[in-house]
Image (tube, rainbow, N blue to C red; front, side, top):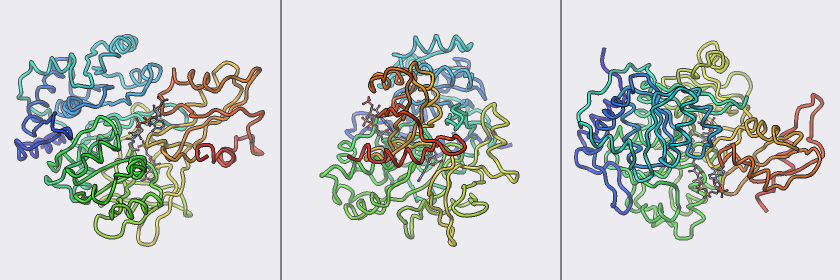
Length: 498
Ligand code: MLC
Ligand code: AMP
């Protein structure tokens, strides 16, 4: 049996690229060649083995974005482990759940969080905790530096897990999506080919690396093609504009594009050397697409994906990129809508995950009898196969590319003293696409809006916390007693647009 560990494919590409830059900062102050990437990953993989990580073990990682963090990501794969990244915004209360559920062998966190993480880990019988800071220093980096730079890539089958990525659910409980080496390998190869990514490309990488977009779409396509990356620890329009003349390729959420357009010095000249702009994770407004094209001459290529499936559809590289459409099913992936259109999009293919971690019933619920994954996105497919997303069957808000499940926020609100009921909805937001708001009823004294927000921030990651809280006497309900969220979205539609 051949070794189907995806890292072997990356490794081949790294060897061929040798001394060329793999990842660097725009000013060149930090630069890692492909050869250094190879030896660095081996050192980290040896460190993981020394820390007791065995094939199939989860490694939970909550660290600031850094190049050392990339070495760690690759090393977990090389060592046969299961990479389990977490948003740096998660609070201790949120982490407690993930640690208990994922039951990792090792936790890697920021030094500032080590004490709290150790306490949380101990509660779940996880005793190995090491750290890595934003500069790529820390106990794990120190350990890796002592290790041998040769390491045999652990044998994995295509069906073995490479990642465990949590995604919230409409029930409010997060589910771990089990992603295999085969899922990642097929999706990355398809995208490299479709978007014609080569070793001549230079990718602007400003996305976080704890979600599918920045992690699997951006990193894996660069690693499989030998493209160079210009590395940003976070998105900042001015820094991207300054670096863009050195680049050919960018991937971002719609907020990246609206923020670039808001900068007057972002011009056709800035984007002259660019080959391709890709958008995804949230709907790109047709207006943004048009304004971008008028300003730069580039038609942003919109694609559609999900944690559970990787990328599903894409507008064509050659051929018309239609604003408001997410394009065609990727080669090898089948997409359908059963019944009337618009309807729920279903997907099947080598990109589709293996199921939810330790939730066989939930997994079964989300697949059809003939093996299609039910996305919960509502769309249409035209006679040529072009897919458009028109809504969501799931109660989900996407704010600046981050998913917020209202139920999770409502559960916290409902437990707060003095609050009767709550309904959390997303309304149009000029920067984040959708902005989170809460509408509540109270028992007794009306609380200060800021007090409710502060109290929520102790339990929930910042991006989930409603930007505004509105108090009403009663929530609007239909005849069945169900809160009418559509009505709330209509009533509060102009909150952020004033
Ligand atoms: C930050 N804040 C957000 C937020 N990001 N609030 C709501 N939604 C968000 N997305 C908070 C901050 O904590 C801060 O709170 C305040 O809002 C203003 O922050 P900011 O400085 O303006 O934000 P910034 O750091 O610039 O971040 C915005 C952003 C970032 C858009 C650059 O959110 C981002 O990188 N988003 C990308 C998400 C992503 O990668 N999604 C891919 C998912 S994968 P305060 O109170 O402290 O001021 C997926 C599958 C697929 O969906 O198809 O790709
Ligand atoms: P996540 O669970 O974080 O992976 O988010 C996946 C969800 O993001 C999908 O189910 C869609 O609702 C949404 N999404 C991703 N890409 C697009 C897109 N191009 N247009 C509209 N929604 C998108």
